[in-house]
Image (tube, rainbow, N blue to C red):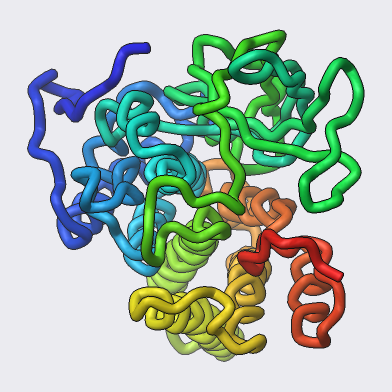
Length: 404
């Protein structure tokens, strides 16, 4: 595998590596108008063009999860969400791919330090893949033989590494978990060259994310390239936590909603509707929902960061604080879709034509709401946690131990 460094995509020259959150955020905001201009092209391609990937790489978004002791900028989850929000303001599909690809540095905490160093010789490498155990990993000497088909490989068309969940088998029989689970599972990382991408991504929205199905057939994966979120092997601090890869996801929804609000306001003014009562109350109502939702996301993230940065654990959060993390995440996706739908209705026929960004945002927010983090399973999980019951998706709460 050839590691890709930061280069200016227009001149082919090396560019300075962004060293902190402010620089990465500034680059993301500067790229957003370019992504908006390219959004129709990205959607029609059903994947990110090469130069768009390189432009994202140059912002530093793919390296932002790497710890400082690995040479990374180690952005907090709050800062990461701001970067994803800025990119998604330009194009949600590009923001979605940036969000997924930026998990590389987060996964590094769950690998042995020297292994991660060999796998990621530069910090701007992209990881894609589906974490749910759709595959089959047969235990073999020194590792596993991995076979399977996975959906939703967002960014797999430009990834360096692919991470996939699989159930364990030994001599063809299901391998039970050490915790008493009837069937154990792990995550396995393979080079993109070992993956066959299937052109299945013909969807309502987020078309440009290239979230194709992919297959892996009898590929040997060394044990050192496997991980579980219950086992932090190479990191410490707020980012070395089992649910860290979910935290910056609301940035996509918030960026799309903010873009739609700004577009609708500008369109209303241009159409001479500044004194129209319906326009006024609809925009104000949507702005109120956006402000409250955004505050909920960042408020939950700030409280979590306060506890973890002071040396605490997720268990030190009170139930309401812990439940607020997945709930605010789900609410952001659902509210973004609601805002875009109401603005679409407000602008009426001017919104229905494909050149209208509102049409694309309507389809994008509808599609992103089908992700598990925006589903009712999150409500059940948070409600069960608050009531002392059994969450159906405990990882959303950062819980990896068996529940009663």
